[in-house]
Length: 82
Length: 398
Image 1 (cartoon, each protein chain N blue to C red):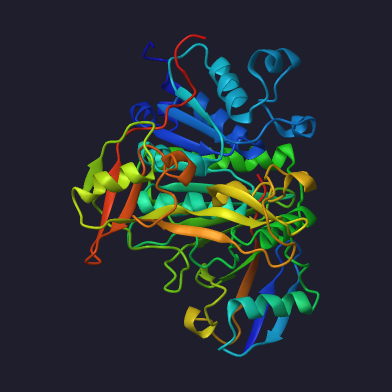
Image 2 (image 1 turned 30 degrees about the vertical axis):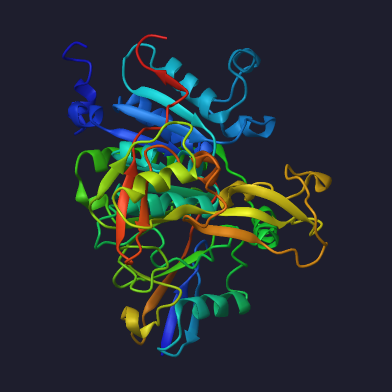
């Protein structure tokens, strides 16, 4: 299915064809491999389905999180420094 | 206090009585913790306990509102927990609230008591291992958790109710929890953290510190709207996103903590592992205690691989897993340089070599709640009477 991933800092999006069985972790790694995202470093990234604001966990499949064709997935930067 | 003292706060929707009933445990007195603590102190919450094992260093100054002057250091030393507690107390010299205390050491050392005493816990630590520990203790004791962190201008803030059937901080986490027993892994994790570390800025720390303080206040007011959500904010672009946290069926954290403590045992301050088993044996046959942290008798140095004697809970390794020869605190013991075995214990029973060790050395602090199994595989939660004494309690005029 065709999905749109938002960047945590920039306004551009990354369009990708992703299998519904793809997990959150695999999707994130794909975005890093495609150079859309920098390596996570200390903090890490989270994914959330823009339509519902619900998280897409690393081990959850996109389908199990209710992701549908044409959805937008927000990529969010999680902080870990203090 | 006269009736106008809290007039601004009441107009803003705060109820001073609810704030006064709030007992906050703040773990981490760095930039984030200090900025959060200042707001909570000025807002007059009832109690604030500051916990940190670290000491102030010169590079902390530009993002530390409580950074000590030379005179402060001469009077009070350099412990972050103590300095921050004393500076906060100075800040509210006009009030008897909050009652401020501090614990200078790793949070794991103090066991369950600080969590049990708190009505809300604030996690402001910079290690995911520590975050995971704090989150698991909050889940165990069903305490609301306000947790934050930043990565340069990016900040995130989570508020978790920690109800039995709700999400915990570990739900939906991509984090890999490094095993602290494998010290070489720990060393790699530390290096990775150092490689990716983006230092705090004061504006980011102030922004998220304020958000965390407000979250604590809303939790105190019973505002369910703030619970089980995570906020992401970029302090440069002011871009904000919020997600609603849900329970992860595959969560690696424990969710099934029992509601009740079956019984309490009373032990002296000098009690050892064997003394605890004797007390338990009065209530359950052949008790076996699940240690709160795995006990490491020996492990390889993360630098040279030579075996070192640890005899401490696993968390004691995380800050410096090196032998004395490599600049660490641990004494070498006999053995080769390769494949030195880990000698680890996760339970305490009659056959355990830990019987003669003081409970503190095994990682069992006063006021802790633990699990034990008997000969018939029945499991019970039990508590150890006592509490961790805070080193300093401030209140009133100072």
